[in-house]
Length: 511
Ligand code: MLC
Ligand code: AMP
Image 1: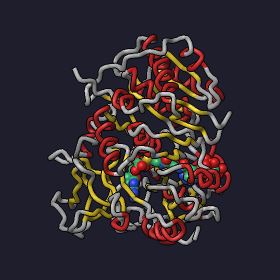
Image 2: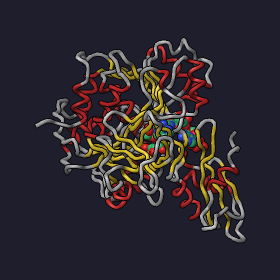
Image 3: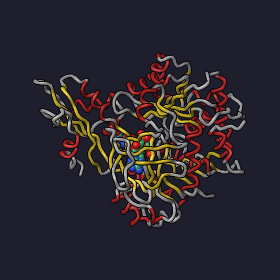
Image 4: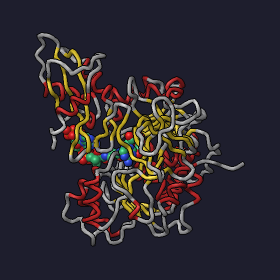
């Protein structure tokens, strides 16, 4: 029987010389550290054997909130290898957020940073998780201590293409986060298409400077390099100066627009520094034409923008060749084998240039939301296309442009922030009558979170104290950069808050 385990496919792409360098760390404890392909092979076997020794039920989730490290990547690969389901969690998440994810996903195993063991293990054990391990970014923690006693040989678990490989939580427009269920087949199909579409080549070297708890860094970047047997220069934390210093050794870079904006602010970013580079890829948030143009002028390289999401991995991409066919402000063409279309609210296809909802179908599209069949049903059309919640158009050649979102979502520095969630926290504070959370243009983050709050009659609210309170409750990137107290929110005739008016009112805040 053919094994569709994603790890097996990645493993098959390792180069013949297993003693060559697979990953070189550029920062973090002990840098530079060199990991060979053999190290990846052996360490993932040992961790997979540790997981296997726990005799977890089939389909068990392994939830992970750790700082970025090569060992954390190995843990991801080991979970695939052992046949369990990987559930990555943003390192910025705090107790209430972690409590929800663990409660909802009911992981059999939780792995966290040693410094967070006390509170995370309490949440996990309360939720019925049996095993909590620690993994530090300096190779410390119980996970590696235990794995050190395990065999370094392991046969990848046999998986069907439609079996679950990972759950990625993506916040809901109303209510709580939904776990997008991605299969081994979804992830491998997308990785293979991108390998061809972006013309990965022998000798490519990827600078990996993104977090590994979202689609972009965990799947698109890591799978890309692994499936090509390419070396990675591994940054635990993005630092524009340090990344630019390594560009002469690399050929491929992937980043959210904020990373490009920050590198452009560095005089060291020059044509010479980029002379060996083959490809700069951007996505996860809109890349401004201004950034695209400034990058081309400074480096001589045309950024390739692509479009994706947790539920579908990558959907569209600007072309690889010729580079002149990459157009600012567009996200390119449907990837081979992926169906992408634009439909109006009545479900009719839009003509070229007409604006509507972007829908997708293909081997990359997820199976549904974890334990939310109703939500899943709502997000698919009757004929089986997934409604992305992005609004856009397609031109006569098939090139897509995103013009907005029907989902109330803010994308700040590549992280998604759902206004409804922040409004919930604000509305729970004493003295708050109601609130509206909006995204406004920000030169660094693309969009920044801003809150507009209405106090109850007679209540004296303290804006900075409210922001400080939020900082203790939720991930820092979700905390409003500015909070306004106002007597009332603008509403339309139907009584609906007019966020567009608020956005307009505050659009110059960070100009
Ligand atoms: C950090 N901060 C942010 C922020 N990141 N504020 C708003 N938006 C963000 N994205 C704030 C923190 O709250 C903190 O504020 C201060 O900045 C310093 O925190 P930090 O962690 O030291 O920041 P920094 O390292 O500079 O992080 C910035 C960044 C990071 C751009 C490197 O945000 C990042 O890695 N973004 C990439 C996200 C990503 O990978 N997205 C892909 C999603 S996948 P304070 O006040 O608390 O001190 C996807 C699908 C697809 O969307 O298509 O790819
Ligand atoms: P996530 O839920 O984190 O996977 O975020 C997915 C969302 O990011 C998409 O639905 C889009 O709104 C947005 N996105 C991803 N890539 C792009 C892009 N190139 N341009 C504009 N928006 C993008």
